[in-house]
Amino acid sequence: MKPLLLMLLFLALPLHGQSLDDRVLSLEEYLGWVKKFHPVAQQANLGIAMGEANLLKSRGAFDPKIEIDYDRKKFKETEYYDKLNAVFKIPTWYGIELKGKFDQNRGAYLNPEAFLPQEGLYSAGISFSLAEGLWINDRMAQLKQAKLFQQQSIAERDLLINQLLLDASVAYFEWWNAHKELEVFTDFYRNAETRLNAVKRSIEAGDKPGIDSTEASVTLQSRKLGLTEVQLKKLKTGLQLSNFLWMDGEVPLEISDSAIPQEMSSDVVQNLLLNNLTDEEDSSLLNHPKMRSLQLKLDQLTVEKQLKVNKLLPQIDLEYNFYSERVEDFNSFSTSNYYAGLNVSIPLFLRKERGDLNLARFKVQDVRWEVLGTRLQLSNKIKASKAEIESYVEQVDLMEQIVANYRMLVVAEERKFDLGESSLFLVNTRENGFIESKLKQLQLTSKLFESQARLFNVMALNTLETD
Image 1 (cartoon, rainbow, N blue to C red):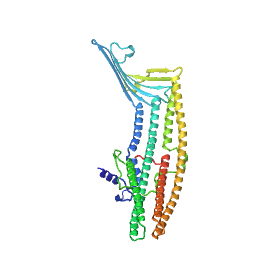
Image 2 (spheres, rainbow, N blue to C red):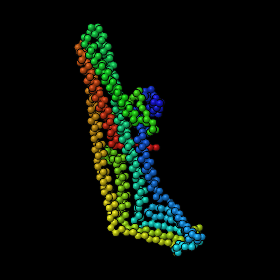
Image 3 (cartoon, rainbow, N blue to C red):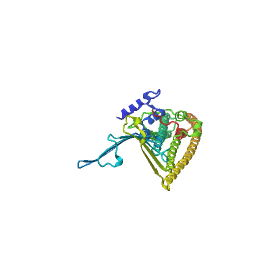
Image 4 (cartoon, rainbow, N blue to C red):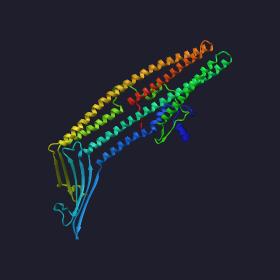
């Protein structure tokens, strides 16, 4: 099963000019795979689906509704009453509700006010609020908040995906670093093996002392130890990388031991992760998902505050209905036949309403302060990340010069050793310094890549695109 999954992985990934035998997994291909299939990416999209479901639920408050009420009582062959009441309601914006109604009542003991024509009575009317609920009410507020929540879910999705890409990128850079270290130790192990064979031949020829064989053997063993440690590191980082590789969000994949990362440079990472970097985004941050999420949260709380302000108004509900015996003739509806109702409710102290309003105001102010603090934090993180990148670029350039100088020292010392003017101990000492400088160079380069990825994460420049 495992070889099949690995084959599917490399067949599914477009290798952009690399042959399948090379088994090169580029950073761009890897991140594309993560964004498309990782369970966290799938889970993040559920937030958007939940936002759409919540919006659909809120719109349901404006759905037309049919209500039927039927009561009948019969006792000892006497029909006390038979009452049918059917209503069709159409809720609209601003608390206005349109109604169509049909009533038909019969029976020996009807309330006098319930007497109607034998064929029933039709009515068409309207009900609305004159004060509380006119400009905003509960269902209007819920619909506005649902629309804002849907937009907020997109911003929250972008934040989750952005963090996922950072974690995946760091795992890739650690895998790349382990692979490059493995190359370094492999080369130096082969060099130590070649040198040991050469020293043995020189000892047999009488050109070198026998102790040089022991010195070369110790060096070979040391290189073997370092090679074994790095092989384990490559294995562990490969497994860590595999945590981010899935197929359709359900089937986990595992990186093959023969898979290798692409040749990396700061320009490659810069072009891939920070391709949208502009000076305007440094100063604005308005399009940052975190800022958009907070602003949308603030907008939702503002709607809630508007609703609480509206609750301070008296409740004045008015209803007016025209009556007619013939629904097929609209002209039969007359202003002389009507039903009108007025309902007025005025709390005397408004303590509950004023308390709710104060709480809503506090929530709005709390989020406003959070917006200010978050904007400052993001701005400072961006500045710190850029300063860190500049520092690592300088350190990497300096380390390249140090590595080049160590290489010259090793080459020179090997020539002196071949001429009998140096010792194997000095050659190994130079080579140890060369190895340490190479490893330090790789470490700094990996940190540079991670710093670039963190700047990408802070600025949220390239989040998941949906179809």
